[in-house]
Image (cartoon, rainbow, N blue to C red):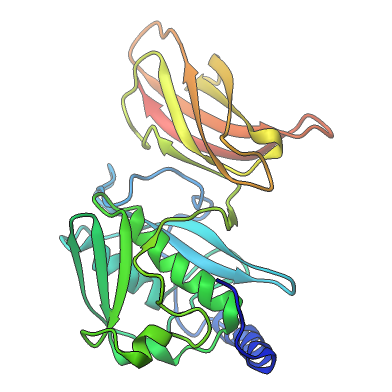
Length: 292
């Protein structure tokens, strides 16, 4: 998939991407509408939070000297009946809050429509979408970032693209390296390196019962994920761990069951983390407020 037609094109595309990221970091466009420090926080995409905001899980691209990968952020936007369309528009117009991450779709790109049928989301972009020049690595990650963003929404299993209502010779070539030849595309989080952990259940503010089942995704040492439930006073009600389906450098899903006893209705927080084998410290902790 990462075949490069010409080495010189790759070099030009890569340099262009670096320049593009520098321009974005100058603050000339909108910044992410997410609460600071919540990029790994759980939020069922496409659902309205207790604060009355629509939660969207967005995947941006981050490029280094040696690699390109994705980062996941949770943004909150006003409720809308067009969550899929709004999610792609966020990728186009809103800067990520993760340092070094960038938007790759040209800022003047329009989302003409997003149609979802039988699990397939078809995005129709305006012709401006084809103007990006990001090199082969950037193109592959850019395509996958859109796919992953939409595949987090209920009812979406695969994603395909159109430009101005069709997939002609220019559209199928996309940005000139990877193209749309193998669409429809499926979700793939194997190249999502940040955050190390995110939680998909329970949702923030959810009323939980025993056993509390914790689910999410992790890229951690040996795949071992720890969870701790605390009440409002900081008392530990339950602790446990689970093993993700893959350990770092792979990413895997995890599930942890936490039986607990609460003396009275109340609330607290769930902490999910991994333990450093070097010094025993809790690493990459994600906290989720819960009630019972």
